[in-house]
Image (cartoon, rainbow, N blue to C red; front, side):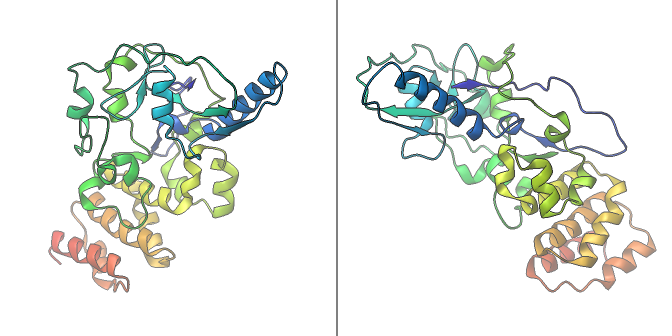
Length: 302
């Protein structure tokens, strides 16, 4: 288990742009690389001390469930939020395992847990946590920020300005109070809290160049840009209006187009005649865009 911080070592500079949020598990270098490097060095160290050593390192990719292995290894307990929690580091830990052919005396599981606490259950905006360490994953906001297609209306305002992940069940956990974990890798605050409008300008190439080494980049540019459009709507950022209209007019991505139509309806509370004429003049071809257009038209009484 490798602890990581949930507070930025420094805040990004203030600029003319509103910022979105990426959750702490995706700050710094992709944790797969961090853990794979540590597992490799651990294995090489063990190899010098023994003979006929066989091993396999796994980080989120093997047949084993990381949290179940960590619980059995005495790292911590599995909380009601489904995460491994330790007294030392809270739940802000990356997990990986090294499977070996060595005879090693097993550690004991920890003797503490959640008790009667249900703060994460009460804090979860979508009530996705069941209470026994499992969840309805499709209702988790972290899942929603990673799922393809249109985000359901129910979840759009609940993600607020987060464009990847959700940390509410960790923020509310008493075990995380007062925790100040060390850096697992260097963190660029500009990548942890990206400027939203410039984020919408990224090409596939520039996205990979800038964000390619963070864990959240696996989901690709398009889904995170959809989330950035939703974040701009939730911020009611009127500076985004021209960019949203450009996305709609270019119609390069049907999901972006539909989400931008919805976002215009959220940001523009009292449309002027020019905006009413613009919305009237749209004739969306895709069913998602058509559905969002009809909702905005009804809202603006066109």
